[in-house]
Length: 203
Image 1: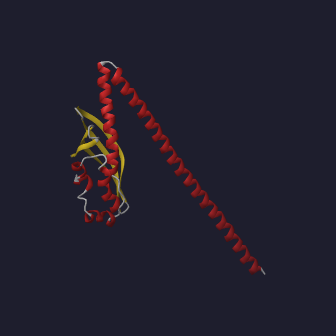
Image 2: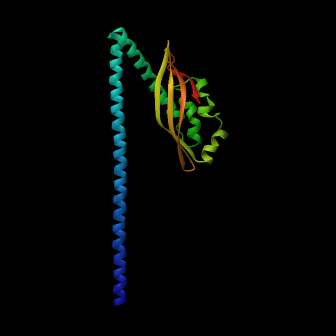
Image 3: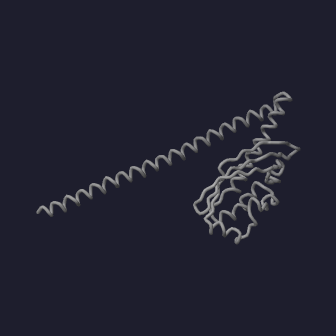
């Protein structure tokens, strides 16, 4: 009788413990999911604010360019050129530095064609040689990369060509080992073509 009671007690204790553990795990997962959702929502809100701010600034510069004094027009032109360079550079370098397998590694060239000329897309320093065999190492070593931040500033404008510097901060993972790095490039954007016409790494 005592033995049966002891077994019953142990089973009940085990059941309650498992229930409480399960409830704790569920709560932890739920909390983690809520935190992730909040983080994503914050990112979206922050990006929406940045986009709205950029749009207002753009409108102000356009107005100053068309209606301001010669000094204001010069400042507005500089700001508009820099804004244009930043916009296309962020799209281009996000493609160049983002991949997670051989397929996405090779796809970067095709995606970058929308923002850069063929000679830029052929840049091996950014896109490799474009062969399937060269991309296999990405899968073999489980390599992934993403752009963390890009800082762009204008250095000169000559007709339709806007030239500047772009500093790319990226994170790369190889077989689970992460490292961060920074590369700086000279970059030229031809507004008449709507494409980047030159990218060269500064070492």
